[in-house]
Image (cartoon, rainbow, N blue to C red; front, side, top):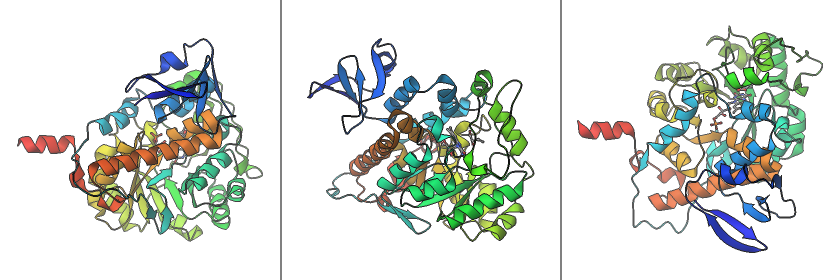
Length: 412
Ligand SMILES: Cc1cc2nc3c(=O)[nH]c(=O)nc-3n(C[C@H](O)[C@H](O)[C@H](O)COP(=O)(O)O)c2cc1C
Ligand SMILES: CC(C)CC(=O)C(=O)O
């Protein structure tokens, strides 16, 4: 990977491979961290130089420069020792490719569809809370970027812009993520508002009966913003005497009695297809099929819930095999490169979702930043496909990758 510098209109290659750019972004005393709006691309100033951001990790560095520490930590952090947080990324690195050659890849097609909805590529926007803490326009900017790149956005139940504001901001396919609150009437009202406003599926998050313990939020005394979706329904104001205000809010609101029987309740209040987000085992995947949901998302909530669960990419095959093609299996967690997307598809995911990369793009450059993040991952996927000998996402097979388990088995 190269960092391209554009110096007075001239493009100069200046920094080398796989780099940690913190020395460039943070210790440069005159780094402004400000997007240069006169340029129609992701350019930033460092002293008298102009830098083009070329990958997700550079967007992350910019987000770190721009955001207050409390918010950057909230967006970036994971649960407890953050073992799974690291593992979500590392596990992708342990998978290698088995590329095929002498295949005509002069034309590639990344398009796919989920539950019958077409997308330009198998990369969707995961539900993440509080976008207005990253960028003033919040989820409206994210929705516009998702629409512009023709991908599906899952709006978080804890969005800072309302279901209606996002729906009316632009055309696009959107799903709505649901937390079930102790006040089930409130959750039911939001589901019905999503349905009325054209959201196409409900993504029920099942890994959060309680909020994971996030030390960064505790130390920073993280304050959650007011959530306009709940105006007139109940007050989202919580004052915690110590620790994370968000954790206090979650423990007051989340219904930890939620269980498999409640899928019937959810089905009784909506006609929309339901996806379960947070499935990590074959046992639960089988149950999900049995209760008749439309799909599952293999997710560990971006490693923010239970530390020491495996990386999602490590359990994908187990879930895919248990589901046996009866419903689509999606994956999120640790996707930072197009190569990661390819690996997930090779191991059986129909699509992936990206969480933090979207936030980093949003913090760095609003709608444009999110668009660039999606485009960059899409371009990286396309190149990976070509170099592996795949013209379409359907051409990506299990034989194109080699996992740790494959390596062990080959020794037996
Ligand atoms: C800041 C942040 C907020 C999140 N908020 C939600 C949420 O409101 N609902 C939900 O189901 N998942 C939420 N998630 C989890 C994401 O949907 C997704 O599972 C995760 O971010 C994927 O990992 P990645 O960030 O490595 O891409 C959140 C994740 C982050 C990082
Ligand atoms: C409001 C929170 C429960 C949002 C969330 O899911 C998260 O921070 O991981």
